[in-house]
Length: 417
Length: 168
Ligand code: SF4
Image (cartoon, rainbow over all chains, first blue to last red; front, top):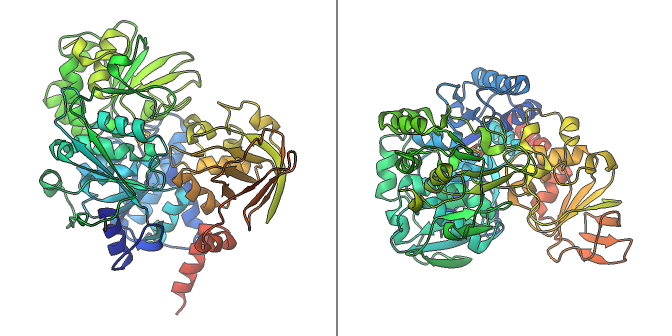
């Protein structure tokens, strides 16, 4: 069996599972945010359940429109806060909160071997830890809060093997954009994506989070990495629960195996309006931009900020560009401050914000006007994703984003460093 | 269960951001959500949609975010069902969970265009274009999902389970 199949089998109390099988399984964590939890809370009330299955395993993180952007958002968050208090669930208030998918691993609330559902499509991020994590909707969240169980269709697994050392300025974002460019936005529909190979062994945890994060952008149910020494050293001191490491059997069955040699890979840029419209940065052509966003659950971690700071050091943001930097969590923000990255950003002319999803989903904190283009380290470049339906989003890694902010057009970090 | 309705034809990869843009997600009110449904790509949709209309789309309908507001907006706008070549998995789950009938036609829906008349049979998966006479075949639901739909969605199904557990 693959890691994904083993985790599902264990949580369903079965010896074996097979792709396509419908199972009912115990979940370790149920997550919701300020957009999805209010719907789930209303539904929970209709279920006739008087308490959540385990308050320590229900996690509520208002992060999309927080700090509250308007009265309606404030009312939604209030509903979530009151539910969290009433049921004693895990809850993160402004001031402690971070973007949920940066926050949960950092806080040790999700661990290797977990089966996690979250009412947010990028819940798949925790696959970087060797957990099976997948996004669901609010109704699923409501039902799982009540029962601690949910139903799954066992996915078949696609295996992605990466060979070769990563060239400079190329990281997890480029690996996953390249992969999506190869297989398309529905190339892994209903399937698990298992990432492995010598390149992955060398890749940092932050790089792995970025890759797992975007598995959903290929239509996958989950992205997963076998936990290794790096995983253990990351999670070891953070984990609030014991964990279990799963590995795919040597004779595990895969629906397909993709092998990518990445020795000559360039930083990748996804053009509007789909993450599969990928080009190497050298072939981007002259694309003038009005805004750059560095942050989100994809690339708002410390390593991402370090890369951006390295590129921005000693430079100024282009006069026609607004650069917005959003650390993923308070802990990342503090660490970036201690490392001097925040000073570099502000000196270069960037706006630095408290953790929030904000502009990533066109919520607040940097909405695009008609005709404006942005380079963003986020994960989606759909029509209207960051603002006006006639605005455009180009997805890239933090080094490309920083270089683009300096030059006022899509640029490679090699042009400025 | 059979639906007969007027078609709204959409393309491939219709994502949840265009079904209901995030700027309207500060509410959970179905009617308010419906009033912004698809406005960025089909501005006339929310004025002209009529109860019983059917959305017909290509591959990967509903990709993107997990917002249940997307199927809720579609359902509240009066759309009777969605027929697509394929659906993104979270959207598929959400639609079933809230009781929005959706049918997957892996072979596509031929020359079906906006304002054609469609006849959809949810039980046997037969989809007929009454304007052109073409017939398409959708995947039937697995038995577990039929059970969910019979129960009226996931919540009544789970409520029944909880009720059973609480009985001595
Ligand atoms: S940062 Fe963007 S993609 Fe990530 S959870 Fe927030 S809105 Fe979703």
